Amino acid sequence: MTQAGSSQNFSRILIIRADRIGDTVLSTPVIEAMRTAYPSAHIAVMVQTYVKDVVANNPFLNEIIIYNKKQVEGDWLGFSQFAWEIRKKKFDLALILHPTNIVHSLAFLAGIPRRVGYDRKMAFLLTDTIKDTKHLGQKHEMEYVLDLVRHLGIDPVHHGPYAPLDARSEQWADELLSKYGLTPQDKILALHPGTSCRSKMWPAAYFAGAADELVRREGFKVLVLGGPDEKGITQDVVRRMSAPAIELAGISVSQDTSILKRCQLLLTTDCGIMHIAAALGVPLVVIFGRKQPGISPIRFGPVSKQGRVLHKDVGCRQCLAHECTRGFACLQAVRVDEVVDAAQALLKEPHA
Image (cartoon, rainbow, N blue to C red):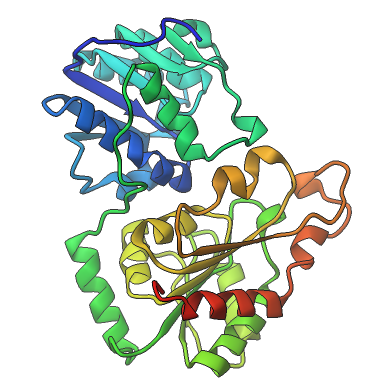
């Protein structure tokens, strides 16, 4: 660790998290903690275009800066122009929550005097670094990013991950459910079978089987959610189900959030939607695959008292991730009846 602690009164703060949806949700406590510590500061966050909905309407933010990855990383001209635009904003502190060569270079070329991050990926461009032990998976990602706040000598005050609601998406969700004949009295089960890597994807047939059984036992109406590139898996789940289901792949993150708010249960893989649901307080059952500590439930599980994780160790000496030679045995080992039983137990708890 270098240059630990600070009593500096920052007036313009930039928080950078230019990766995925779930990681950004888990980083929202940093925004709240910095607002609590610096109530009068101008606080901005830099995120990728498709992640904007995660931080839009966040009450602790003054500004959202869009990191257009194709433009910024496409050529030197685009990168230089973007660095110049950041420089003109005159930030005096940058917190870099996910290390990359590009964002470290951006913060440096933007002339931000204090640049705090992890000791990886051209970390010599930062003024302050803390040791990056995320790959060890010894604690939650939320706590790892809050360590950057602690490095500044701040005891982080926050209320956990935050998922904002958008008024237009709220109206859209009400109109959509009404269109399909769903009322506030209906029990709604959401499925999210897609994820960023097939080594984290529970089989479509298993999702369909679990949903059908929960429809039979609990009388759920079923919605199947997915990203723009996940329509194949969502349609596969719907085809395999005996009960009717509404397929909603490709809606916006903001619309996903409003839909999830109206659900009584989510069955999902390890994905960004999981973290949005947890932030909303939606009961959820999550199927995890893979064995590495750095992507385990300890680091990336839902931050929720209403979340249940199913994760099997099937004895692999080394996890090969998407190059698995065992047919993703860890995922196959999570049985449909286990998921259904976990869901029913969760629904019976007083807080559910």
